[in-house]
Image (tube, rainbow, N blue to C red; front, side, top):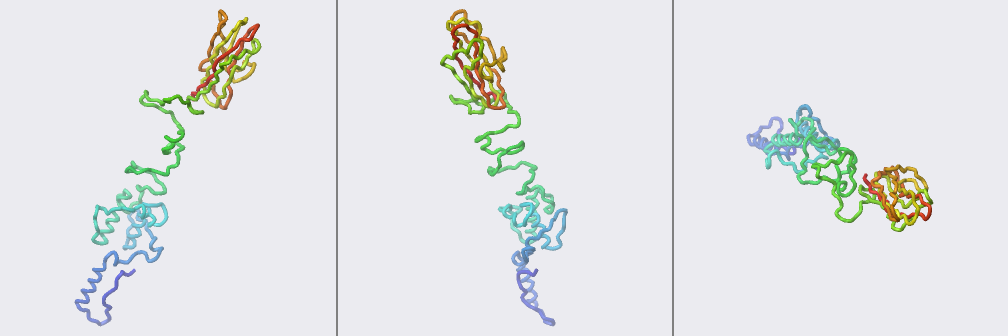
Length: 330
C-alpha cells in the first residue's frame, strides 16, 4: 500500500533534476515518515482482522507481518477466540514500558509494544505462546491473585468441595459441611443463645414437650395406657419422661412407666431398665416419682412418641402427672 502523502515533482525522461528538487523530495519523505504518513495494514475488514501466531519465533518479513503477530498476542491476552480488537477493553489503561516514555520513531514504538506483550503475558520473549494471562473464558492461576481492595461479584453459590462461598451462604443462609467442624483451640465452640428463645424446628437444640398437670387415671389393672405423647420429626433425639404417681388409698402391688412409639395397651418397644422402669411403692399413702432420662430415639421419618403408664391395683385406679420431653441432639 502507498504512503499517505504524495511526491512533489513528477520527473519525465531526459528532465534535469535540480539540487533543490532532489532535496525537497527527500525532505518530503522524511517529514511525512510519521505514524500518520505511513499507510495502514487494514485495506479492508479481512486485512484488519488478520493475525499470525508468533509462537516459536515466527519471523515477520515486513511491517504488515509484524503487526499481524502483535494482533495475535492481543487476541490471546483478551479472549480465546474472536477478533484481536475485541481485547482492547482488557488492555485499557496500559502505560508505556516506562512511565511517561514516548517513542521517537516506529522502531521504538514497536519495541515498547513488544515489551508490553512480554510483561502482560509473563513471557521470556513477546512472541512466546501466552499461558500466564487469565482468559475471560477461564484458566488456572499459578500464583496469588491480589484484588487491590476490589470486590469479586457475581459468584454462584458454592455446592461442592473447592467452590467459593458467597457471603449470604455464611451469614445469610444455611451452610452444608462435607467434613467435621474442628475447633482450635479446644476452648472454642458453638455459641449458644443469650436470651429465652427456642432453637428453630430442625436445628440442634430443638425442644418439644407435653406437660400433664391434670391427673390422668391408670387403665384397667395391669394394662398399659398412654398418659401423653409428642410428635417428633426425623432426627436423633434424647427423650425423657418424668412421672408422679398418686397412689391414693388403693391396694396397689406394682406400677410401671415407659417410653414407646407404640400406643395403647401394648408393651412393644419397652426394654426393662432402659425405657421401661418400675415405680417404687410407697410405705404409706404418698405420691412417688420415677424418671426415664435421656432415652435415645432415632427417627428416619416423623413419628409419635408416647409416655406410657401401667399399674396393678384392686380398687380405684391410681392417677399420674408428669412431663414427656425431647431435645434434638442432631
